[in-house]
Image (cartoon, rainbow, N blue to C red; front, side):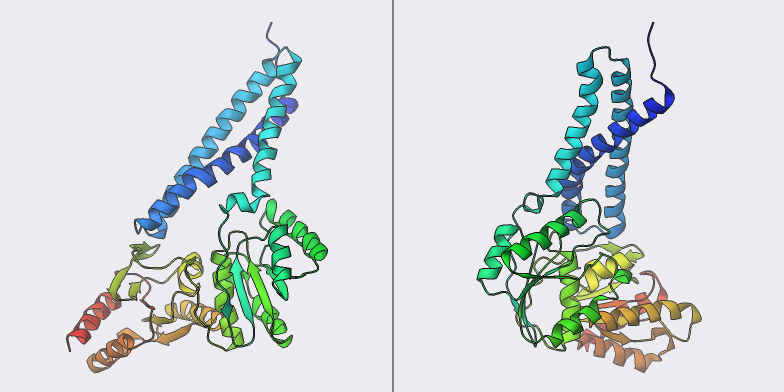
Length: 368
């Protein structure tokens, strides 16, 4: 007669297989299909919405496969009569989960050994931006005369960034290199503390710093923008090679993107993720809002955008399009043509009347 495990034990076994096996499959999915798919989507100029949809489909497939696999392994484990299978299958799941965790704990493997970016000089110090530094990199930074390492790793990015941060603290101490922790998350609203930390850093006087997150991409580029705003000094030869740009991108979540001319883009109002990934990462110089502050519905969006621009040192131009007469619209189109580029112009939706009319006036200004 076939034996069945008690329900609590069966549930515990299912969760065991699902947790460790799912973590392993998730790691393979993120480093394989998700990375390839997002790379293709960005190369092909897909907008954020179709890219997200593709990622969600892959994650949905991952969830389904991991649940089915956990159910199958639970059934096999429960039905096994030999000790080798009864204990071996859970041990195999644990081993796979630990192997996946080991990969995340090795940033050099996960980043593909990405090269460090060139040093950039601000008005008061020199900074180099890149991915997580292993112990040999920390020793090299010490030998090269770096003042300190600035880590943007966040304890909220579980399970690996807290562990990596603790390891980095220990290795930096052994190397004799100061570690300054300024945690950042890849969302605009989570980084209000950074400006104050940068002002404290500026008071220390000139120095040479290595700044990193995990991959050395989005967070370091946003930090760079905030650094320029805080220091009040221009960047010499800024390096934005690791930053995402609007070039070739077809749409944002709220509508399509139109390239009006070289480095001038007409977009809808960006989401928080779009602000972080494409606007405040050092690739945009001027942001132009077509929203009318006389419309109460626009006020929260205008207030939010003004706060973002101030925090990240981004030039914001208010151009309440629907409130302008014909002469005012013509003058505004000419002014925006002369603005520092790259420039992003937006209403709330791409298909709004002000977006379509602005596009026509902008084209007419070139003809003149």
